[in-house]
Image (cartoon, rainbow, N blue to C red; front, side, top):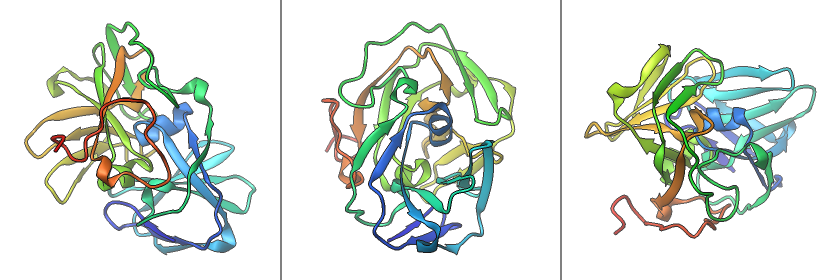
Length: 255
């Protein structure tokens, strides 16, 4: 089983069997992935880095270090302290995984715009949105509420987030940055993704036509948002199902 980040700066291999996937909704995973993270794990003697040119680590707590690509921002690894195992992003795997999501961790910390399983809750009230990366190097506010949130399951979004993304449209000029220290990755299609180079948190996306959106997981509750649809489901991972009853579109335009 082989996996990689979006830009190819980090490539890894794992030798099965591997544990089924756990989906984590903790604040740290949501900020780093931009929505929530999904990972499998394997003993270190069955894990191998093929390419580590872009690999960087951020220690968000004494319990574990978080590995990401410093060139494209892909959230790839979670290494627990004192344990001989590596958790790796299911969304980073190339091709079918043969796995499934076995459990949701910390569902009580899920964002208020979605539910870990089933339909999303009713929107909350929010006048001002507060966003920040995991390490605090990037902080901003913008007018609320978050509003409609769209999920994208394309291969690029899955590799960069480690699962799939969820974002909302915003006026870029409306973001009021209290601190800003970001890196920008330009995709092969000409879009740009902003992320923190210190902790790997996903921040924003600007498409090739200039449309701007903010990653939902970086916003601190309440958001006033609600997940409303899924796009590029033709490219979704094989390890999860979409069970919220929302509209699904094979591609961007629903065709």
